[in-house]
Amino acid sequence: MMAFQLLTVVTCSIIAVQDFRERKVLWLCFPFAAIFLACLHIKHVGLLPFLYAALTNVFLTSCILLILWLVTKYIFKKDFLNVSFGLGDMLFMYAFAMGFPTITFILLFVASICFSLMVFIFMKVLGNIETVPLAGLMGIFLVAVILMAHLPNCPSLYLL
Image 1 (cartoon, rainbow, N blue to C red):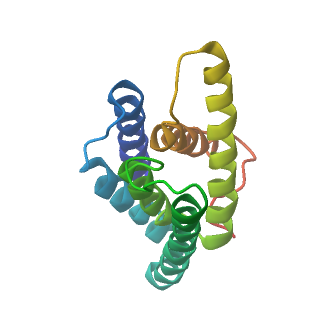
Image 2: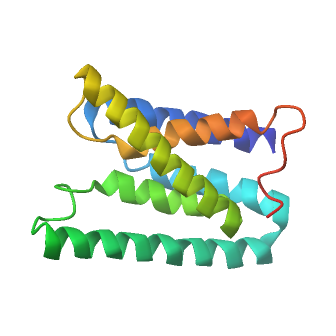
Image 3: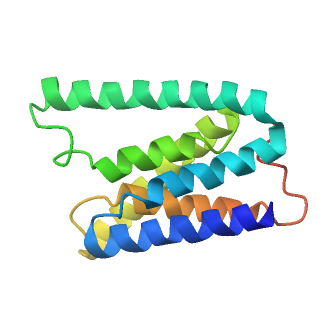
């Protein structure tokens, strides 16, 4: 189990570095992140609860992305993919959906978006950045969550 956590941390760190440096991420990183997160999830809850949660999480992620697409296309009248939202960001969200039970996923997903927004605003004020490296920021958040899960008296991410 520790190996999958380490592999997840390394993969998310690679995604973050590539997203910050080049504003693009090698596509192979996302399936690996999804596989490592899924393996962690399965090890903690079993295959059937994993499948139920993963399908629910993918459905929720798809609904969120559909709403974003509709708002972008019909309200802002812009192209969605690679203009308003990156393919890597979308792929990372689906990889993220593999990793946790549904309630935990929702809490972590919302917290990661809030974290990304706060960091982006801070970096924008400093003048270092123009666009949001969402996959990279969410990757950093996920690395922090996985590392903090090892602190004493920290509840399991897989209980909900």
